[in-house]
Image (cartoon, rainbow, N blue to C red; front, side, top):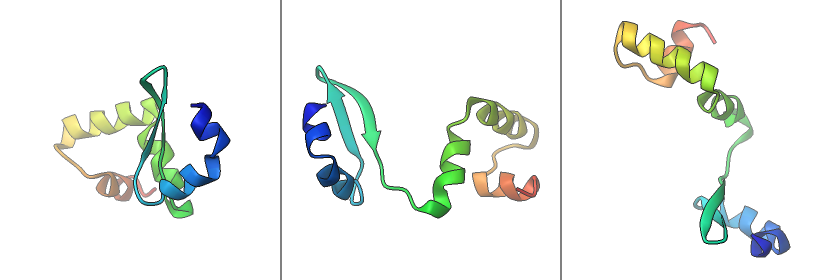
Length: 76
């Protein structure tokens, strides 16, 4: 983790190409991943437990649905 802390700009640049896994005592504790401004809302919603439960409920009721289809169905 100290390596990332001391060279954060280098790793931020590297994560534009691929995710960067940060470890502490040999265990992954974080992931640096590039994201476009336009993707932030989707990124946050996909990781929100309440939203995931709602999405799973819809999947059970209506079958499989992509995230884009769900947003369209809810006019989000």
